[in-house]
Image: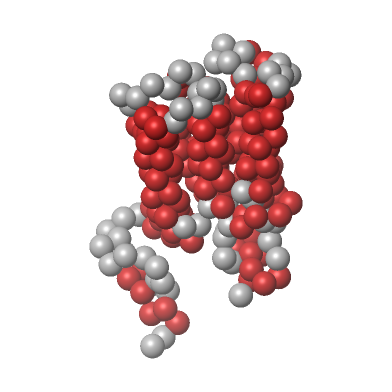
Length: 220
C-alpha cells in the first residue's frame, strides 16, 4: 500500500462507501466532522427528549406547567453541549482550516433540530407556554453549554445548563422577574429574550472561533 492509497476517499476511515467518490469533498468533510462529534447519536437523543416531553405533558399533574418542560429543554441543550467534543484535540485545530465553519454549522444545526424535536413532541398536546418559550429556553441553555465547553471541554459541558436549570426551578417557584432568569419568564418577556439571545450569540461566537477546551489526552 502506498501513501496515496491511504489518502483515497474510499479508504478514508469512517466515510461510508456510498459517500466516497460521489459527493464533493466539502460534504465528506462535514459528515466526518459531525460523526466524530457523535451528532447522529445526539439527534436520536433529541428525539427521545421530544418523546419524553410529549409523555410528560399528558401525565404531568404539576401545578406549574413550566417545570418539567424546562428540565427537558435543559436536557436537549446538554445533548448539544456534549456534541462539541472532538477526539483529535490540538491536532485537529492545527490542521483544520474549515473547523470554525464546521463548529458553527454543527452548533446552529443542533439547536434547530432540538427546537424541532421538542416542537414535534408537543404537537397535539397542551403546552401552556407555547413554542416561543420552548425555543427561547433551548437556545439560552445551549448558549450556556457552548460557553461551558470553552472551560471544561465538551464532555463536561452539560454541567452548566443543567445546573442553571436547577437554579431557575427555584426562581420559578419564587416568581423572580429578573431577565437573566429567562427560563422562568413568560413568552412575551422582552428582557428574557434579550438575555437568552445574548448568551447564545456571545457563546456561539467564542465557540466558533476558539472551540472547546482540549487536553493532551485528546490528541490520542
